[in-house]
Every structure is written in structure tokens, then in C-alpha cells.
Amino acid sequence: MKYQEIVKGNFIERINRFIGKVIIDGKEELVYIPNTGRCEELFIRNAQCYLSKNDSPKRKTKYTLTSILKNEILINVDSTAPNNVVEEAIKENKIDFGFEVKGYKREFKFDKSRFDFYLEGENKKAFLEVKGVTLENNGLASFPDAPTKRGLKHIKELSMAIDEGYDAYILFLIQMHGPNEFFPNYKRHYDFAKELEMDNQKGVKVLVYDSLVSPYEIKILDKINYNLDHIILRLAEFSDKKAIEKIYDDGSKSLHAMGVDQWQGSYKPNLSNMQELLNKEELFVLEDKVPVATAILQTYDSDYEDIRGEYLYGKKYLSIHRFAVAGNHRNKGYARKLLNKIEDLAVEMGLNVLRIDTHKDNYKMQHILRSCGFRFAGVIYFKGKLPRDSFEKPLRIK
Image 1 (cartoon, rainbow, N blue to C red):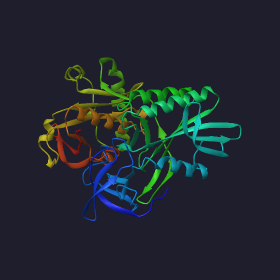
Image 2: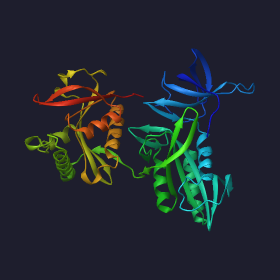
Image 3: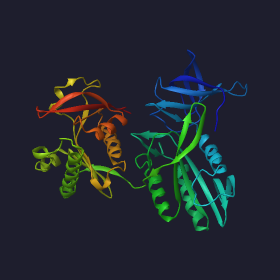
Image 4: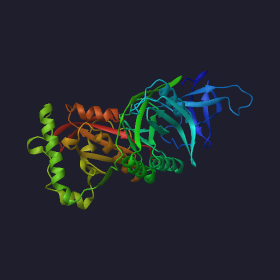
């Protein structure tokens, strides 16, 4: 899908659901925002954005906001785009439905429902709903960014279509390139996320694709992974001890294999002080049916008082220690999921900075941190002895 007459601007503010202010060529302009989602993490003052221009006298504004830059990722915010992009992809057989689409119709009425697409193939009749996704954090995309009664209704209707003998699909189009996994947003709309999980088990097929986005175009790109499970960050319990110790052991062995002198010998983590951590409510586990990761979270760390460098973002921080993922759950995005959950918790606590430290040779952890928006702040000394590279990340308090 291509756009005509694109201009660059800087976003100023959102006035209401449909209208915003943007600086274009040094002049403040009212622009149309074709997206009723909250998009709070996108519509930030001075964010670079792109708009299509239309001088029609029938329009109230000359410009339509089409995309906006967030952390060097260009995100298409046009809610009319996903269905058009998917239609182009259907015509070009770029979507893996598991059958060849011989014909299709848009806005197809079925009983009291209206689906985005009706698809036909050899001995196949199917309905398809399309949802555009603009919410991303730490390389993970999620939907919705606000409660969606309409979206919930659509999933239930797809489930009903299965009862009538049709195949049913819901396709989430990530309106950017970058996220490597998708998950339903239980926090923003639990009922939608839970319904999606249940109806997927019933037979509603979930497809997730990302997009190639430029100021002038958006088109479907690659199929990406998804996880529909309800993943939670919770306070650890004493019954988690064996699982956490196994995670520590996995981490120690992994670092040893990398040649990193961290979590080795007498510095290997243990839970000799577990009761103290539980009493202070500082020990957490990330749970995806079972504990898959763990971290200790504290609002003060004396080691951070002396840094060979500089912290830029203030002193109200949440520090992260013993951050680790279970060995059999590595390379599945759980480190990013854990960081996401920790960020949410910090914001709920009114803290606007995350701090974490790691060994200078732990390149895997440093890569994750940098890709998730952390900056290197300097060197601190663990227990006053061991040098560790310290990172920080500012958070947006809502």
C-alpha cells in the first residue's frame, strides 16, 4: 500500500481521538489521526512523523498522519492500512493460510456478523478478521493497546463460524518491522486475550505478520512467532526455591561456556537469604505455566552510589539483579518479556528509571539491554570489588 505526497513533521500533541498538532516546515498544522487507539507511547512531543497531503476542499485538514518514529523504528499508525495491505498480500499469495485462496470478498456479511474477508479455496470456505498492531516494547508486539469490545465481539463471531462448518482466521498485522514475537495484551484487555486463547484452542487459527514500513509505503513482510499464554510476573514463594536454583545453575553453566567470569565459584548465586528476600518482597519469578525466569528487584543499591561514569535519569530507580532465564526456555524471548513486566511494575511503583549491571564480557546480556533501550552509564563495583558495566533506562510515567 502506497501513499502520495508525503511530508515530514514533528508531532506536538493529540487534541482528541482524530485531530493532532504537528509542526510542518516550521508551521503548526492541525492533522487528521486515522487511529482511535491510545498510542500513548507513540504520540510523544517532537517525535518525527510522516503525513500524506491532500488539498481537497472537502477535508477539514490538509494532512493525514501515516507513520511515526519510535526508538528508530518507523511505525505505521494508519488504521485503514492493515486490511488493504492484507488484500494485496492475498492477491500475491503471501499469506500462509494452509490452502490456496481461489477467491475472496471483503466486508462479507454472515448471519449478524460482518467479517473483513471471506476466503474460498478448494473444498475450503473461511472467514478472516484483521487487526493492526502498533504497540511494541523491547522487541515484542502486543494487541490491543486499549480495551476493545469490538475486537472481542469479532473473535467470538469467528468461533461461532467454526460451529457452522467454516474455517476461521485472525491475522495480526504488526505495522512495523522489528518485533520478533507477538502476544495478546492481558494487562490492557484480559477478556480479549483470554477469549483469543480459548478460541484458538477451539480452532480459530492465529496468524501474525510484520510489515516493511517506509514513509511512502507499507507492505506485508514475514510471519512471526506468537505466544497466547498468560505470562505473569509474581512474587516468589518458598515453593519456587528448587526452580529458581535450577535457573541460577543454568545461568552459571551458560556463562562458563561463554568464558565469562560471572556467577562462578563463590560468586554463584544461591538462596541462602531467600526468607529475607521473601520478607522484603524483592524476589520475583516470571511464570508461563511454570517459572521460566527470575530477578531480584530493589529500590536502592549501595553499589550504584559510586560509578565510574554518570547516571543521567535521576535517583528514583528500580534495580535489577540475578536476572536469568531457565536453560530450556532460552532464545524464546523470555528475557524481553521479563524486562517488559519489570518495566510495568516500576511504572506502577512510580519509579522512572531501571538500572542493571552485568559483566563486561557478557555480550549476550549487553545486546539484549541495548536493544531494549538501555544505555551504558559506567562501571560500578559489585560489593566494592568486582567491576560491572552498569546500564540504565528511563521510563515514561503515565
